[in-house]
Structures are given as structure tokens and as C-alpha cells.
Image 1 (cartoon, each protein chain N blue to C red):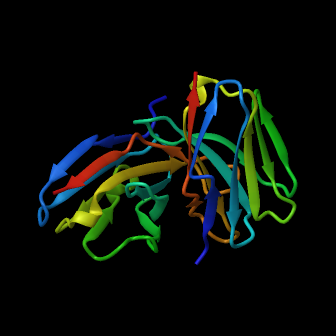
Image 2 (cartoon, rainbow over the protein chains, first blue to last red):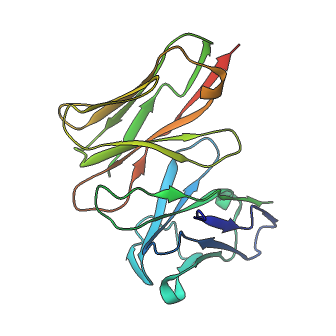
Length: 115
Length: 111
């Protein structure tokens, strides 16, 4: 069974540009999460989708970040315009359900560098 | 807001020594998970603890959940070079689906 995949693995852009990150969850997983780890800090929750609906987007830093999950399959996270402090590793995770028994499976992450 | 503190931030041990990392939450947790991230890799799920006072073992790893469900620990006995990586705890409170991660403990094992 394929795991969570993310694309691209690395992205280097200049301040002010736009970047779109993609996450493909494990097939059949309704729940999709975005997290971010800024250098040296903890992994922080950004938002949670249940199918195509945003369940919780309390962790989104500001309105430069837009997440979508059209059709309830893959998800994109767009940063527009990117700022220096957006640099970090963006992880996507998916789970079958949301009960305590449901494990979140993480993707390999996208390392974003904003110059 | 809810915070999960994790100590120590770094730990260097000689191969064969033991290692422990601790997590403390500002609020009571419904469950806590532990992850390991190898250098250059992504977080990989290790285990989940749900019950107050729960202790689980995986070979040389022992995981504990505090009686008050506000703290947890991961203990590795007789570390090996393959144990190198960053260990994260992640806690969830009742009524929410998101996990709050600790800052991680980076473990280096010297051969």
C-alpha cells in the first residue's frame, strides 16, 4: 500500500513568489492534515480536512496560506506571496478516522526555502 | 493555548548507555503519540498511549503515560547507533482532532 506522498520534495523560491505544495494521502483516508516545522522548532499543526471540508484551520498562520482539497482526495497548500519566515518543512499526514485509535501517517515533507 | 514541552532538546550518549526524553503538557491529554524522525526523514509513528498510567514496551523502548495524563516519557535501554534521530511526542486533548507536538529531543549515539 502506498504511503502519503508529497510533491515537490524541495522548493527554493524568492520572497514574493508563489509556491504550491501537493499532498496525496493514503487511499481511503478521509482525514488529511498539514503541519509545518520551522527550523529548530516544533512541528506545528496548520489545518485538518475531513474529505473536502476544512474541519479545523486554526493553525494557519495568515491569509497568505490557502489550502484546498477538491474532491476529497489530494490536497494543495498554496503560499502567496511567500515570505522569508515561511521557510521550513511542510508535512502532510492522513488518517482513516479521527478516533483515538486512528494513527496519522506522515508524508516525507516538502522543504521550502524562501530567499 | 495548549503547550507541550519536551526535554532535553539534545542528548549525546555513548552506545550502550540509556536515554530518556520527557514530555509535559499544560493541559490534560486524551492520548499521546510518539514519533521518531531520522535525519533527513519524516516523522514515523512509534506508539500511542491512551490510559492513565499506561506503560508500553517495544523491545528496548519503554513508553509511559502519567497518572494525570499530562506527562509522558520514552526510555531507551542500551542505545544503539540505529536509535539516532529526533523523538517527538504529540498530544491531543479531548474534543479536538489536532495533535500538538513537543519540540523534540535530538539523540546522538556515539559508537
